[in-house]
Length: 182
Image (cartoon, rainbow, N blue to C red; front, side, top):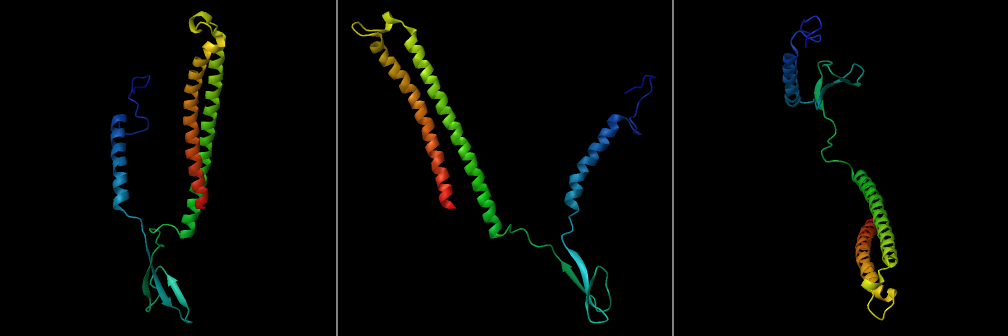
């Protein structure tokens, strides 16, 4: 970058911006290396001594001629949580799953309502179309000639509604299984 006076601007750095970026990238590359090379201190050394009146004394420094070095380690958490904690987390997860499954059922129910509404609209449009001559066989009323088309339209929508209802039944069975488990 150049100032209005034509002088190079260093943005408060002693080096040009490209050089500063290269140095910063090098440092950023070293951080993961340092983290893996320098392990966190997982244990602490302490000294246990017997004081003048016979009491036990703990210190980070040797506290006398009778000091015994001891290592204190943090509790082993590699085995995970207790059985009670695991059971609590399992119940929470199952509760969350049931809540999400109920939402899924609501979505399927809404989809069924949308399909039913679309079916009713399409059937009404078909009834109102009024092309008496082209679709009505001789000797039948318009409604009688229209019935096969209405039945086919209804069957198509009913197939899609039944598929959504089947999904609801499957999700409901999953909720029931989770409820019996508890």
